[in-house]
Image (cartoon, rainbow, N blue to C red):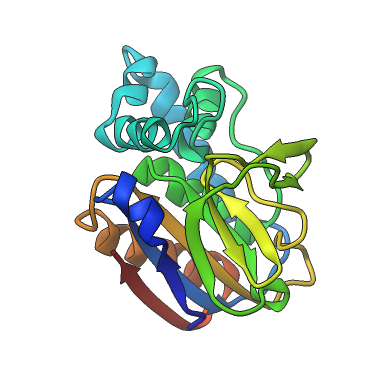
Length: 220
């Protein structure tokens, strides 16, 4: 597996930061019927809650917000990706449908309430470091304008930042040409939830993207 590490600077500000990593070969394509049914069931579960907005107070969501604050980023303006997905569901917009790999990862994120970065390994160079964004750093987010990365919890390889707990970049995004992926779950509340979350993510990729040669690792 590609080496993934947490920078000492981020760890000093967020001592409980931990990552759950899954690398796998995949067959990328349209989401199969079984995954589509799972996505709809997840959407409906949120909609049927008596108080859907209560999911935004889940411990994992609160820990992510606290992590952003500790790094100096306003979590009301820059949300963790899991919270952003949950807000879509609460608003009745449903989850975006991209491809089977992305859709499976989004499902894992909503279920775990944890942000997940997803990267095409063909476009990753060297070690991946989880660190705080530096002044002046930006990249073009997927389907978005340039993202201000300063103080944002992000992932960077030898070429520079390529993903974050808010939005990943176009450089390493998963497309229909993707053959091997690295998915990284971000926890600001310690490693405890990551074993189950990485197993679930690997299982979703196996079921819906013919994942093979799967390797999992927790970094804390």
